[in-house]
Length: 168
Image 1 (cartoon, rainbow, N blue to C red):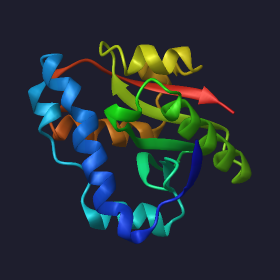
Image 2 (spheres, rainbow, N blue to C red):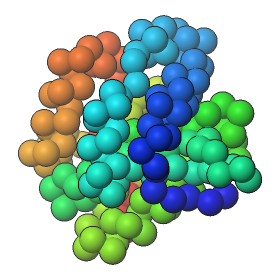
Image 3 (spheres, rainbow, N blue to C red):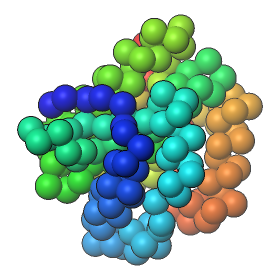
């Protein structure tokens, strides 16, 4: 699995990956999540320009997964990691997170953080297997509190969510 920075022309493909990766939420009783629009091209471009939009590519160099992140309170906050279902269960998400962790170390950041659904098997339980731990509410940094407030404003708190952290 090769991981590299996303190219500008690939950003619409990332949106397609996001839509495909969201489909299983429908079967899990979360159709609103399945139908949620992916980040806009302008948002993806902002991450790409900042050097924090990475893709995992197949043998033809076509993206099959992506990760976007940004520094939040001394950690690289994983804003989104999505794997196309046809590439799922092959360690692609793990490889992207490992790549992001290496980039974060290079920047002198101390951890990876993310927010996710607590009860979705391919969310919090998956990240726990990769070494992420749930942060208790009192331990949230100001930046993570802001992330959670934005998520709540978008209605994501209809389902239990957690902040998680993996030290580097």
